[in-house]
Image 1 (spheres, rainbow, N blue to C red):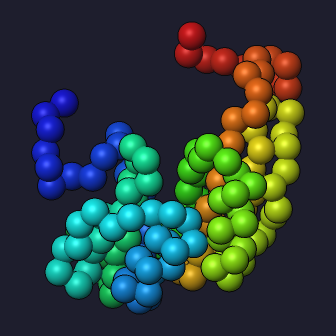
Image 2: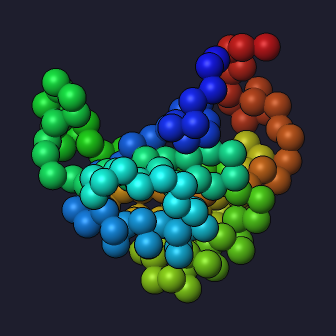
Length: 144
């Protein structure tokens, strides 16, 4: 893949729309530990966390290029892997984030919590706590 310094890091880069881009950037950085990488005029910002990134956009239209977006197409969840989910949860809680589900251990080897950002997007923060064979909890590994 060709390197392009205009693109944020990561193979999958979620784009999330917010009513107030500036407030969203500040909130995401303060609450979740992102840092702003690039601001594009007043309508886009690239945010990075480790070797992953998101693009936050100003929600001014119900369109993405030539595609009209429905509310359900604009909704979604973002899962982010972190080294210490409890510390991350504490940071988000201290910043006033709306916690939807506290840190919980799951049989698939992850400790996760869910939070809603100021744009209504749901984020799942996940820490690996064990290396578990998917067959042990009912999963089926497709790619080996």
